[in-house]
Amino acid sequence: MIVFKTFFKVLSRYKFSMIMYLGIALAIITIMSGFNSSGNASYYSVSQGIIVLDNDKSEVSWGLIAYLETINYIYEDDYTEEQITDMIYYTKASNYLIIPEGFGEAFLSDSGNPLKIESTKEVDTRMGYTVEAEMDSYLKLTANYMKGGYSFSEADELSRESLADMSAVNMVSEVVIQDDKIFTVFTILPYALLTLLCSAVLPVILRFGTMLISRRTGISSLPSVKKQSMLALASALVTIGMICVLIIISSLLSGEMLTARWALIAIDVIVFSMTAVMIIIALSSFGINPEAAPAITNIVALSFSFLGGIFVPIEHLGGTAKAIGQFLPTYWYSEAINRIKSGGGLNDIAICLCVQLLFGLMVMVIGMLYGRYNLRKAE
Image (tube, rainbow, N blue to C red; front, side, top):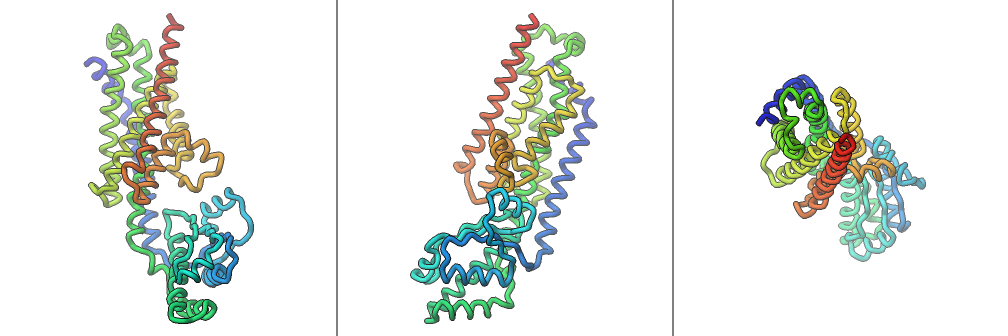
């Protein structure tokens, strides 16, 4: 019990840090959720930039591109994958469309059931969905005219006239707008949790390694394994409290709780929290000065967040950043969120959860081995 009492006594010294970082995290979550809701509520039909790769070059694909060009600006140059990612991220283009070879032939033969056009877009805004709605409206209306006996050129002209005064925004489901908010809010949680753990729990554990704490509390005589186990348990209890607070606040901000996808997101949060605790335990084994905790907080929280898809969506990360991010638990947390957003279930996110836990276990084992090596070296 002496370890527990000492842990929470030392933890009370970091109340200001906990409140400060909790306030920062909640401010970011609130701002992000506010942008999401207000941005979508005030959205109206505007011209978008679209990158188009036409592998078909048929009458149908040309007709589709010509129609989209009457509403949007078309980029038809050759771009690298990184350039396309940057254009979408900086909203220069809302969609990257790839028209497959044989698209026109399939459209004409199947009367409106063409091959699927691949569309890459920013999932957290309405712009990408608007372009897809415009494209879908044109193809369906043209197919209906052709079923009435018109040729493609005649159907193309009639479709353009019919759609000239219509806004494709009205065809975008309101469900899509509401769906984004819960994912936007919960995506920020890893940053909040990492900052809280690194700024409060980590320095407490580090201070347990100092001779001053050991002598004052009389725990220096305790076996190292038992002391580490008690510290891990105390850290876990504090983390559980943090998780509960963050999940409740995030649920209230998103306006959704106790649904099937909310439960899946909660599982993802819990697994990441377990991983975060393992990371903290590993860091505490390297003999870091407790006064360095603020610097560690910023380095770990910000680097994990930027490279792991917390602040920048995974699909917008550059090639190098994405390759590095795949080795971080935040990347797989974000990937799980994206899979849930796409309608995935527990089986679909299982691999993401496992990778997070494996990362935590690997880092914790490395940290403990390093700590044991230092103890033997000191002896």
